[in-house]
Image (cartoon, rainbow, N blue to C red; front, side):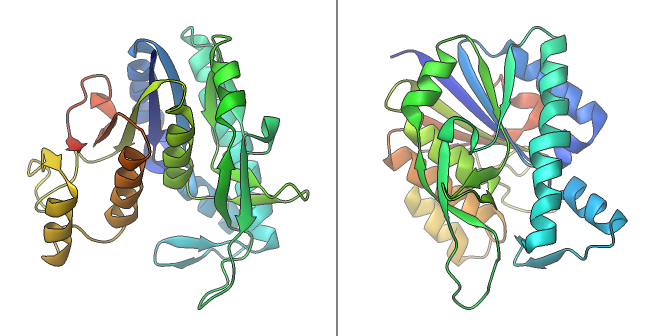
Length: 255
């Protein structure tokens, strides 16, 4: 099968001009087919503040009421997405910005209320790998915003790591997929205060051990859970690395 690289990049990197340009220059160098999934949470928080809308977070996840949904739709699907598309076009990458509603590529259901009502937040039900495959084979590079839809006319705020992992799994039927989670650190760290303490390789056993010891915690836990699920569902490799290293594949490799 032909190779495809799916890059997921966090909001902090796409929201700062210098780091965004560096990332996109690296992205352009990747051989073969590619897809970019991006965040944009800090920009959404800043715009909400300007509009007098309070941002509510629980365990790092945004509570998305009706007003907040309008803000994240504007920021993720508009401002951040189109900025990335325009910059990629300027360096010769034929990018197309998408939300999950476009071409019905990502369908979700509204997260059920248990202990917390997250509001208009989607849990991914299905990614249409067939349509994405067709689009990619037209030499188009999808740039996917962290928004999905419920097929009843509603946009849903959706975790970008989850979108990246589910999209990688759907595309694994058509390509040899490498999934790269790209953020501001060099990889998964043994010591969060030492940027050079990168754990070069993780399997399920070492992940469980480091989690029990409190070495891996917080926002890294769902990222790694998505990574292991992706490997189980046909993704060839998962790498967690820094923005400037995406072409080199340094960082933490998930086995």
